[in-house]
Image (cartoon, one colour):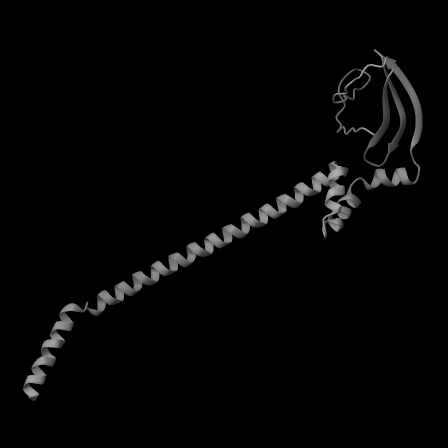
Length: 174
């Protein structure tokens, strides 16, 4: 009986050894598996980082766009003010916008001018001038004297020789 058992064990051992890869191949397979896992982890980390960067860029772009829109459109600022939590953002943007001009108006530093000129049925009146350290603001009004409906395009500011002045121009309707 012991001989038969030993013989069966030897046969089983040889059968397993024939089917089992040598130790070197198992080690190489483990190394390849580890490299694949590391590459997969690196790829996931890269995707996660990319997702954070794009999300951050989108949020920053949204706040920049909101800030610009709040400065340009008082109607949009009023709508944003009604959204809970956005009131603080609107106040922050409005507070930093045009402090010099706002203070000049509040302290009544507007220099009244009242000079008018009329041409082709349109009366142009410079009502007042505001100035701070870096800019000059002309407050003006246009009236149609012949009763026709007129549309105003982008105004041009020229020097006495007719050349355009280097300036940024903002105009609006009140």
